[in-house]
Image 1 (cartoon, rainbow, N blue to C red):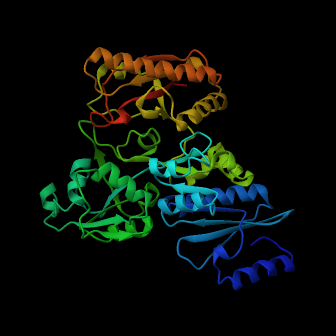
Image 2: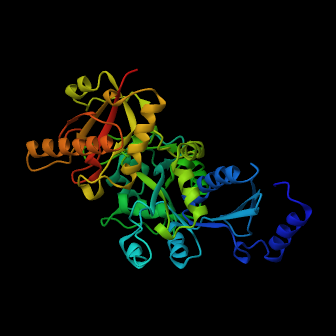
Length: 439
């Protein structure tokens, strides 16, 4: 705890005691409500890093008496500052943001159209000044460490959680009943799983055990030889990760490259939402810190995937064409993909910030625009030539945007509809990869 004066410390202790450690009993400089995935570890780490810059460098944590809530405190020249982080599920965060109780909504899913419409008179939650991608996560599909299954398709995963496949022997495993572990209905992790895996074809089997906590779910799966569950990537712990495939694309395990680039079929963005121009200065400062290099370093420490680009040499499997191997033979791939709003050529909010991250990477590593190569991809089209044109237009769009950001005349090409990372019609297939020459 910071070295308060006795009067100041006594003041805070009295407030905590009189409220029975209830966070709502006194005002905080900032309240962050929402996702357990974000709020369990990542949000407190970002808040601690930001508070350490604002105060004397010392930050303490206090429980509120309510599960999945905590208060972070520091002392500044102007007095003590407290921040409440309440991690009860993504949907709860929207309600508190809309009501004005919270200044930041932590969410492990994008804002829903109905939610955005509900507050449209106050702010556009889909705009760059309101929607902030703070990290990339991969939905981790977890089994017991001794389970011999290593990979499965999204469709098979859906059938398992719908109760259509009930024994591991049906998948080539041991003769053992499958037991299901799932996040609860308030969770953005559940919303993502429901959207990406169950879709409109499947419904979660009633036998599934439900959890508010990612960590507890993973721990229970790791102790159950018949178990299978899903959590955020930061909560794998002692469970075994499965590789996941979609359509004809190869199965991928979540790792630094596949998740950061969002090629992994169950990758997802983690968000903080604010009310645009109505966002208080202190909350804006935290958002800026989270999106900057220091904040993204904390993202990596927390177990999620940072958006700070790094260069890696991908391991190609047998599905990669020889022409692509030749094209990239003298290059490494940056862990960033540029994607587009509604599959068009307009860059989405994350891509707008990634332009500056690529620029910073070049400056930091003493490289320049001539070292980069942009490779565009398209989803399958009615004609191969059309897919080729779309892929080149996407790469050209990123080239122009980089030029406006101060990285001019980057080389680019298109690779058509080849090397999909998802099934036909998946928006993830429409992307621009960033490659950099070997040093």
